[in-house]
Image 1 (tube, rainbow, N blue to C red):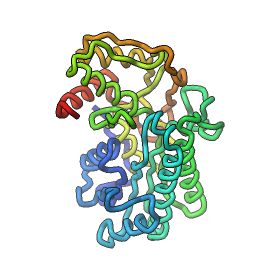
Image 2 (cartoon, one colour; image 1 turned 60 degrees about the horizontal axis):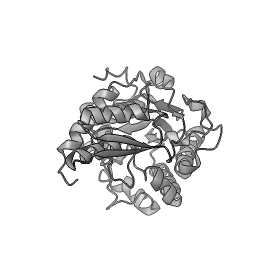
Image 3 (cartoon, one colour; image 1 turned 180 degrees about the vertical axis):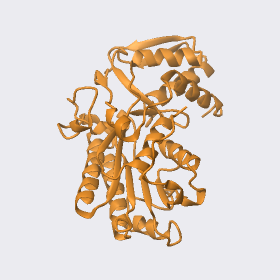
Length: 332
């Protein structure tokens, strides 16, 4: 169980909160923690893209005017974004840059114009570890963010997130905007995206194993050698870090959120295969790319500033994720 947060500087229970992406993977977990903190449901507004397109300036300005029937907004937690895996980033780099940059810019601009800064409102943004330079030494430290160019495959997305951080820092320095910026490592857990075109590693792997069992597939093919190491963070742990940043941080100094544990891709595959009960053969295709050898975060700053550490082990997190995937209809 996650330990209790340290003494808060901001009591969220009385705040009117816009939670972008609140119907998404991370956003749903953030909303659950806000409710558990005692924030009334009617004080959390989740804009839905079908009604409010955050990439459009007019729609985003209207959000601040209409979210609480004209009552002022006190806190924005920005979890929304155009996200996807390696293939999606390679296929549509312009979409990943323009949409993510537009959402961040429109939200901060609309907040400023609404008097949000003058009322001491706070803006919390979720960044991405893809902003780190491709040549950064693991574990990545927050001071490394500006020391080089990100991996080319996801650079448009990573740079958009980094530009959003710089916008928060500029508005904090010039206008006094209270802000926080967190950088979670690879997330997984129940509710993860399992669309093959846009999913990330763990969600895709769990889905493939469950499907392989249902379809009695004799083999499960995996790319590369399985030797690269990665760090994974259970979604509820990440959400706890986001909420603590909203409670405790006013300065947009980037804060990494990581589990502190690295596992090889092969180890994760073996764990999912074992826990799911798949009995076929795992086939490694070494002609396919392995990717970067090591990607993980130094979360020392999160422990110091937020009193936060990850609570859910990979073993437990995978068990919960597999159980969730099995609960979906068979043709999901």
